Length: 323
Ligand SMILES: Nc1ncnc2c1ncn2[C@@H]1O[C@H](COP(=O)(O)OP(=O)(O)OP(=O)(O)O)[C@@H](O)[C@H]1O
View (spheres, rainbow, N blue to C red):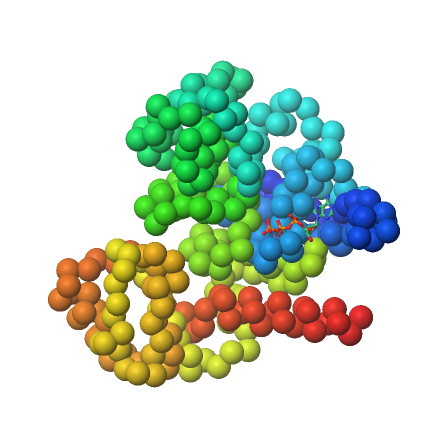
């Protein structure tokens, strides 16, 4: 049998304590306990969890930015806590709060970062792909959150990394920028990179993930592809959900049967859920046609990842309370 390809990132039994924490009388707090995961080349691996679940801490341990108290981490075959410059050059990182120098303008900053690598990706290409040109003459401090996010993503990619870590890449993005960023992430995957990203947005996971780890209270409580997670959930099969992207602000409620639920979950992202019948899909398609709406990223599922996530998180919380 051929050997399975080596993982780009492999974490086994990670343990991380932080502190000392004043609220704990100066004791340390265990925020990651026995967390394991693998991320492969040519895949988007998503760490999904609510605020405070431990996603950022896990990413920082994976990059060697924080020292762990237990477990092993192998990033491109090396322990990141002992990473040399050669390893760092193969890894791109976009942190949650960016860490960009506020007085610089985007293009000179990206040129500066490009200068640190032997074979950087042309800055002009990234500027074009991420729509940075429209605010190229504005200093970082005056950029909106979403614009900073796009510059931070470009900075993470300019060194042509083999592995990229993206902490909440869609935070603060409007629908158009989100579309650009998601398209770029799909291109990175197609180019064979290992993309590891965190999100608390189920929608992001549903659209991007090849493999999802659901993190709760510093441990992995479920893992699998999105279809696997969906099919493992106990929710009744009769409930179905269609999700699609289109222009923001549409309201299709009047064409739907009353037992169906219509939601605009984010501007331009819609879900229709309930006991969907083939006729409901036909009604929806006719409504799109009549109004000249061409949706993108249409998805039909038995139930939403949100249901699965809530179910798993509730089960994990119940288990914790009995420990
Ligand atoms: N230095 C610290 N002192 C005390 N607690 C900390 C420290 N660093 C992290 N924590 C706690 O560790 C837990 C995990 O934090 P982490 O930032 O990894 O979560 P997260 O899943 O990334 O959350 P978010 O989605 O809000 O970014 C949280 O409860 C956080 O409060």
